[in-house]
Image 1 (cartoon, one colour):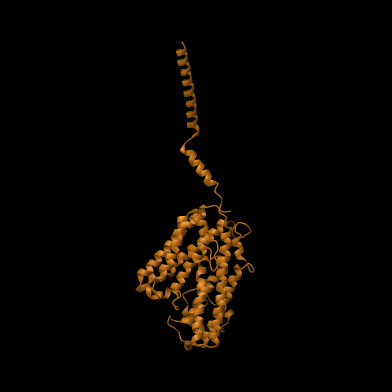
Image 2 (spheres, rainbow, N blue to C red; image 1 turned 120 degrees about the vertical axis):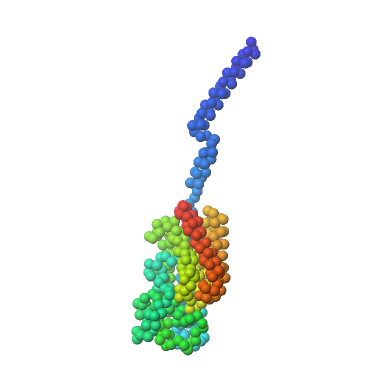
Length: 376
């Protein structure tokens, strides 16, 4: 009797357990408890709750330690160039000519690096074409030189852009790439050279003032993006502007400055052809990308690399390598570049490919990362 009662009790308990388990599994099938979907939901939630990147330091350092620092150096170098040209005008000897030539090259460097951020006042105030239009309009330039037109900073300013700026100065100082003799420079050329260099200095001063906090303070517009800026409604807007600036110059170097004369085999399309400074120009363009990305010019700051590294360390490392490779590959082209477009085509093609890689990473990876990310 006791055994039968035990069996009966055991049978009842078993039925109870089975009933509980059935209810549990039915509930789980309806709610998905313990499934992989729960893990996915947790990951999605965690990703959604990730903190937005605060780009305040990056934007402030870009505006002040990169852009303003570059433009300040440019203006200082332009002042030194003007002093050297004035000395040449006062005493046109070979020593003064070579000092002016070296000063031109020194001024050229910060300008070429600044082409990684050709937005803001340099664009809206028409300063880029006034400073750096090329090729030089040699026919019209010879016409002005042969005329009786008064040559002053103001009269030069009124001329079309291809008759002033860096490359007009370059042409007058260097002529055809060989070392020019000071005695071959005419008084009229010296007059034009002095006036157009005064105009270049006026433009670099205008550009520096446009970014300076004591001037128009465009630096403040960038640094305060998403806060008090009237131009950049969000930090993402300003970060996107930075990346687009780098894309533009990478595209111009690969598909314009190097490719155009290379594909056409036309030396007249070569930038800085009179001074044999083309390769340095191209390298400095890519160094400008490096400066923006690393947040530095003469002083170290926080660059875009901080943001990229936090999101994708492998991408950060790869891009830094690509940029340096592009600089080195351009540097491997034998001088002068205008001869290498026909005599050293493999080296020139390698440089085009290296810069194109930089451009593609900016467009396909870094810009996408900025657009897909959240900022404060």
